[in-house]
Length: 504
Ligand code: GLU
Image: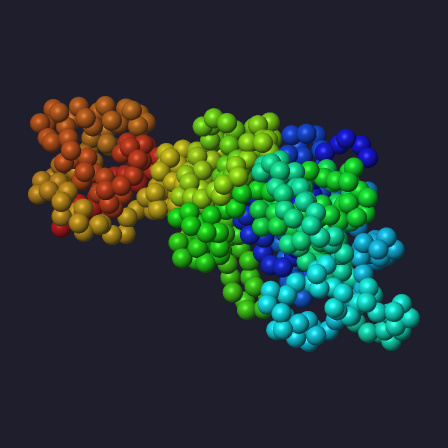
């Protein structure tokens, strides 16, 4: 085995990838890239009961959207394939036999009813060293009977034979040494004859070994499985090449109490999935970050800081910065509150950082949907004037509609407050002033209009408020003369004329 860092993201295709899973993928990616290593996508689909069609494609699409590129995986192949566990059945069978031959595992025939009975008889029943000799398995039955049962097609499972009373140490990069006593573990099922498939535990360990995985970076919910995994490595005699573990902190509810769930997203109105997901059974739609208008760079930056920080208070970090700064040692042990308002803040920052032409291109479809076909240059200019006011591209329309169309109505409250008795007369004069301006640029207009106001002794605020109401239809928008310079003299004058006629 070489020294090259190799990490895997190993989701089970049981539904859309949760945002916590996305963070796990991201940390694996950052760690791999930081160390010049390989990032592998392995699909763990040995639980056929929980398989959901479309989930694998969803995972690939989501991680591609975020810019997490794999070096090997189910969708691109590689030298260690196949990368989908259901395509590796033969491999697992071989390793189950190795454990059976080494007497590290045994065959058990107990039916679900028998197990249920046992559980009813014995409080806290656990299938382990203290009980296994009372059960129907290859340790208690004569070999001939075992062979016959198998030959007759009797369903069986293979269980891991865990030796009691041994301290098992999991050496975790983030949590340090976590020690548990093997007696608390049960003889986990590693394989089921019914579907000819291994369980998660066996497949996971065999694959990490065969794929030469060096670091297992995954969610905290897998920490309880880690001692079992350590024992499995030992049983196979693979201690030397056992990967290092790093169990990431939980993502917590925004309030900080308990694990973040889909319900929190529904309750507080934010997505917990990277992409929109339509449940193939119920048809229910769950919102996604992409469809909600988040930029992938913002999502990456936001997630990177949920459980890790660079050791100072730097917040804006693009992918290459994150790769350079990332380290597992700086990941926190304690859960990270899912502060979705911070997610919006990141999106705001990234909208500001993105070049105006990119934002304009993203805004264009919204305009076209309204039947508007402005030039790219025009839209870019508008974007430059209003982008600081938005966190999402979809909010641009609300901040800029008046660049594309004259107000159809005038906000009543604003009109009441800002349309004075002499507004019609003053704006009529303003039309003449604007008509006479040769250079209609914003600074020149401003200078001339202000000189006129001063000259006449008019009230600057009153004129500008009425002017804005006429051009915009309400009291919002960027600098007034930036608006008029953009929409042009003819349009400005026409809007003034219309307002003078229509506002009472
Ligand atoms: N298949 C497991 C999951 O869905 C992988 C856990 C691990 O990374 O070992 O999260």
